[in-house]
Image (cartoon, rainbow, N blue to C red):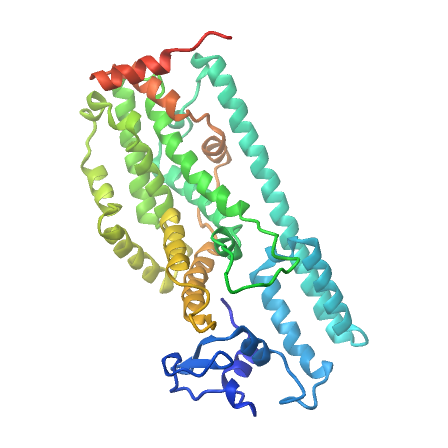
Length: 438
């Protein structure tokens, strides 16, 4: 996470009269200094008791005898500015926003300069939260439209008048529009959502703060739902019952080309969603259709996203993309969209594998630094502006086209190519059987 330079300087460089609160840079937690101490390694704070950390952060008469609000105000304002900029969603809670306003009003009273800074900070924060609310309302409308279209499709299966290829048959353009969707949805995920998603009660933490019950991960969840939607949309486009084998093969090859262009762009999330959709059972079983597809490019993409070796091939390609992004001269080369489910998995196991507190009761700073590093990288990726021109018609289709459920996909697949063994026949019969009312 971004660090406040002045406060960072306070933490690392300031000495204390209380010997329990200071260690030389060469001392480490392994040497043992009791629960009251702070432990350093290579000049970095790695652990400490909560009491010592609070003492370290909060000025007191012991080591700051001439403390005055005027002297502290610039540092507090700097901290609040970084907080509201980096974690604006914290202030969706009315209690948090009220506390922020009360604190800043006290600091700004009687000082015109501080008053202007505080006013600007609050206004920027309110604009961010308003934009977020508008985005979430738009998502609700988009999802409602998709549900309505699916209802119409179920009532009149032959009402399918459009498919992806009738809307756009250029895989490069579709990959670019997918990148638009990915970057927009990434941009609204707050860094704190990663932590809140895996939040668990610390057995050593007896704090029952009135703010601890506020947990919101809706934008992160919406992004995961987008991945699932794209996977099912790809499968739906292939399995639509009105298509013939030759048409289905063409759709398969089209999405392979889209996935390949996503890889070239650096959009690994859409790439994996497309591969997942094409590997779904209702699609993978269409052997007669697959026999008409040139699969060389798909085999290469599958190998690139192969999960073996903890996604070794993907991680290698992803490191290459991030390195390209760091030295890029064009916005297009800056695009890095990670396979999001794997990123979540990495953060989850980091959170599970390292406890918040060490055995001596110290806060485990090394764990939090590592988590901060991963989330900070994500924050860089999500700020990239999409360089491609928007196509509203394609975007609308990608976001609202009817998507079959897994059972409906299976039925459509069996209608396209009949069951080949007893297991498939039993599955087909169970799906076709509709119990009579009552």
